[in-house]
Image (cartoon, rainbow, N blue to C red; front, top):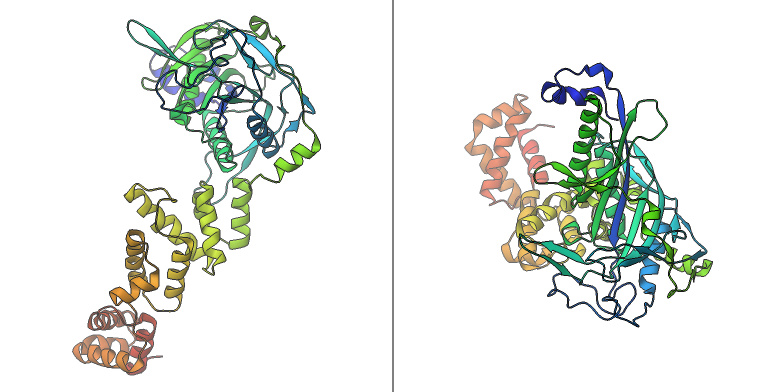
Length: 504
């Protein structure tokens, strides 16, 4: 919701004469998210997809729209969009058809785009988000953002503008592209941020896309309007483009809401238009008046047959879907009694959550495993600039280390040392412990000797313990650990010191 408080800085600067109480508006936001599907070849031809290749090398007669070149459907792309629809609870069409969206622009060599207008693959469905403002320690309120449709189309090329020229690269042209369209159901920039974060996580989980916004694999346009609170009719819609990071989506929406409020405050009229947002400067500029569907002269593509999607096809794809991130988080909370903060970290990365479950399956206590992974493992990965796949620590390594710690073979301090060594060398924890001589002593005779020596050299602390000062025993424990070069088992040391001092 956009409340009056947002107008404070507007009124203090450009609109000093406006009465703040006259503004009681809410924002209505819908998103159009374009996601490149991860396939080996393009949507309607065998030419490879790719990023970072020399300009205009991933082309062929179909991509360049040479006379006589005909499109052929990529079934892997169809599989991916059906999976997406099943994952998000969409209705999957029995029959889907293809249309031509006609417009002239240099990045589209055909002067039209093959897309789906009247018969998309997926309709309805929703994306689950966690509402902003939730406590970092407790799972907050969740909300489902309804979808209008998900359709399949081909991507366009990329234009690079210089001072004197505009250059076009058709390497991206023809890449399979999903457009995911929401209902106008988002109410704030933070909700849009949460939506894109959740959607991206789900698509990466399912292997449908890498969703790397820097590489253009995920792009977002936002449709934004404002209206008085209590009004049901939508206000004048402005489409915001060039939102090339999730943070820029949030910032751009917030900026556009404030701009619309300032126009209304000044007595102006909002116009339906498309605006470009500059994330570096935080400013937007009008690009063009907003096109309507009839401007594109959609008509059925005569070169492509309709596709029938039967129950057998969808059943097979449904069986390939992974557990969804929020469902996995709820299971981790219920089955393993993990703190919410740990589950929030684990579910962000499917490989990381799988690693955690593998460690638990090998016998490690869930809480202990989660603590090592979310703290030590992720810290060391970040320091080394490594991915989980590149790191030498396997679930078996970590489960083995936890077992040594539970058995009292190593202390918590020694376990940290062993973990660091495993990350560097890839050795098993028992190998590191034996090579470095880190096994804790559980020899009661040896431990009693060290404890007796510590008491003899610190009579003051010993008397304080006998007099009831429980904390004074820590000084004696420290002395024992020093005498044993860290090899004494702390739990046994505590027991032996109390026995020698006659303290229960």
